[in-house]
Length: 452
Image (cartoon, rainbow, N blue to C red; front, side, top):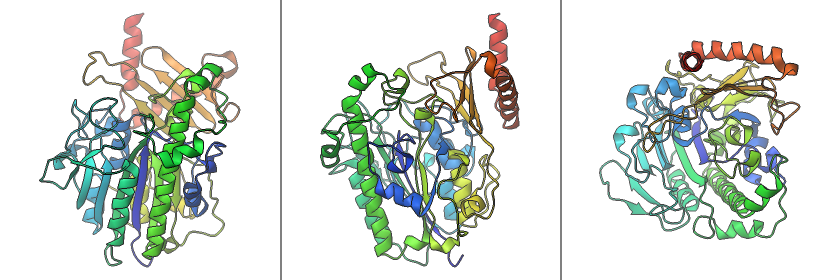
């Protein structure tokens, strides 16, 4: 490695892993996401460890499970006591750090507010906001308000579509960087999360491409839901296309400034969206694929000396907690002991086949504001082709063989034909929980016993 590589994280909100042309979606062409895969890696088995905005983002920035960081649900803050965040580690290693976009890790009952520097340590340059996709009042993708720096808390307003504006700012920032100082830049885009009304929240230029297009639906979307979701699906695809176009602008800037072959470019999302699958109009918060499976495409630059013949679409399981340790590993920076995720840098570069044999997902829907009783706790273990989930109210929730049933239409939980597999995975998921100090099954057993 001649120079320390730059690290660029571009990530979005609610982009499900199936919605890219390189992932086989026939409705959309994403040439720039495809390029990242073709010049690096594209993971089909990438997962959000907790498919909801705040919890997932805590996993991204700390490399920790939510039960380690204690940032369990939306509107709970990620406290600095959780351990070093990615930006802090990178800055201490001599990197210039810059964040543009949505944060959603500072807590509070009001989504749209200034993010105190206390909740976002490690950034040399900061432009951002907590969360703007409110369905009423201030906050749309054409009227986003943001804060800049650490002292002036007065809100400012963007003057164009949010993702385009963020890309403009990122292009300008990248053009100012020099080869002497490596950098870590985060571009956190709020789309394709709803709302999807046109034209306020959907870019016209991309929407025209999908306005009259005949859509193809996933088999787990019924006929009624296809009618209900028709307009929303077109808007969702338009937002994804807009993100892809802006990734192209970023790549062009890196090429023109001579930084492309010294920059690792990641594109991923915090979680997915149902978009009509399984009878659900929208949303996430579920272990089902449309909710928990995310895009992860990574361009590997020439400075990293990737092994020849590296498979561009590896079959490895990977999750959000692995992004921080892997990024640090690619830069030769020691991984903090607080990280639960695995440094997969050697796997990325083709030097090792060592990768996780499973991914562990957690969800705790605390009603921090407006709900007094926690509801919707579950845990999932995905190992090989099998995915097993347990709910805190009913116990065993689902068991799917994704190799034979990729759309999860045949739940094998408590079925005789899968009895031994369920027993095996139930033991494995409990072992995993105990390994990481997750008391979910202790709580579950106590609750089930009390209900007898």
